[in-house]
View 1 (cartoon, rainbow, N blue to C red):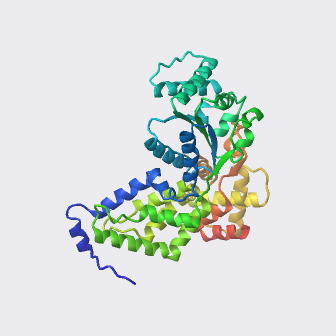
View 2: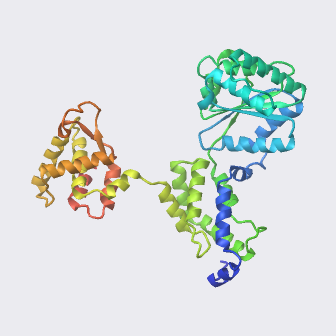
Length: 433
């Protein structure tokens, strides 16, 4: 066990010029907001998607050939981040040999609109005058001519089609025009499709599919080893920075101790079980870093615990905390009616259930009908309960069928954690559960 005798006093002395904890916090936050920094940790491995994608595109640039590739995988797994990283590197390596055109299926899935956008971006890229009035055919011919010109000038045009599956709706004229133009000897282009649908290539028509080179890169959430590497890559402070050396050494040692703790591993497991994507992990880490105590200047296990509970907030449970006792009674009555498999019930049926509980257990919490109706309206406003349908607007509230918008487990947890929930309500829910 190594002990680091860095006292708070010493920390404050080294803070004479600047608080190192504040500096560390700024550094960690800026890292977490920089996808390029996050994904560089995976760029060294030859098996990484970064290396594979860079190889595919750079081969097309160097050997002056056409290519197409699909980046597939769930949202939040770094498809666009890795693509941006590859593009930034290639633009540095081949500054005058690459031209990038970006489209998004959410904006440009209409063929006319997409070709117009391609023509506009090509005009901007090559300082030409863009005509808004040009037809689909004009833009299509212009694109073919530009691809030919770029090919003759040994310039590769990279088309990035985000939300690729949305371009496959309709007649797929854009995809056909694009891939057909790439068949000519002189053109030099790469089409990169990005989609969260793993069957995106199956959505292509026969004539489009035959022109598509079936290269696919699959992006998955990080494995346990990658997760560990990522945590260290993002959170460990660099020893060669402007931060005091002693502070960096102690910060990193404390952090590695936390990583080794069983309780920390449980937090990461809980996080991965609900969502294992990079995006979710980064949100969690950003939250943990923001909880860092600037007095002590170090991250603690408590910071990660607090981040977990803030990222797993349950709005319905938070609403339950502020409910009155009467509102809790109404929710429990509705739950009981559902357990009894009463298909349709309204406020009046809830009141009958409320009265039967009172008669059976002689509870002290028994309120007048109009007070209960007001509490019921409050639950409707809070969206803990709602009407079954939008019909019957002219009917008065007490006759309209209603339903619960909260799960049994949530209601059970809410009653348990409520500061003044009557014991009888917990018993009633226990029985039903």
